Image 1: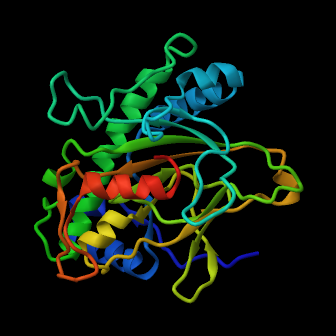
Image 2: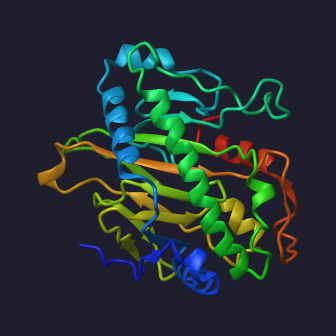
Image 3: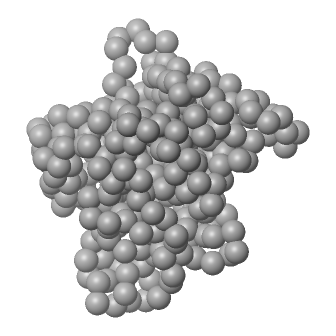
Length: 307
């Protein structure tokens, strides 16, 4: 049984009541592990439960129905991605998961409309799906902005430093289904990887399986009390900070024998910069030249076989 990572939950209310303390506590957790755990995130429970119900209903649909919402050539950025497609960088076997992506809804004629495709929705099968995930997308975006205030202060920046870079960001809400695992499975639910984006906000980490790789090379369980939100640093923020905040390798391992017959569901929100934001490290480094968020995203999508 792997050891649990030393991560103490941080009340999100500290961002409003004591921003300096929030900056210290989030900053310490991210610097040590690349992860933080939030308690009291403020997202209404009825909103979360509605989203869980809609996700389970979608993944229970027949395979031929789900595949109607798969868009070949779309790099998996909208709609459905079937089981066995996404592959961790450098891995030979694909992950044991299927998922659905919800992106930002843009008004007609928006300057990023050629980059950020419109959402597609399974309205015919699940009319409740669209409103459930539009609401959750907005709530997670607002929560992420609060966390980014603490991160900005920790890094010696104005608290609103990240507001403009993530406004109209190419963020993604992913609905994940890990089906039951065969006893002889060679692959894992999610191979060792780092996230591409700025920060990831994860609902559903209470179910065991999420592990991070410590700086000592040890796999540690990420502790997630009931009702908490797990947050981790992505590659874009690691690059922006010149490596001060690490984008930590993590994975989702297969369950023990007595739980192999159960599905696992989770909902990560990948908070992104806007496509034209130039990621320029606070500390200049030759190994990290400036690059736009869109170009960086395309490079990484190719590495995980989504583009």
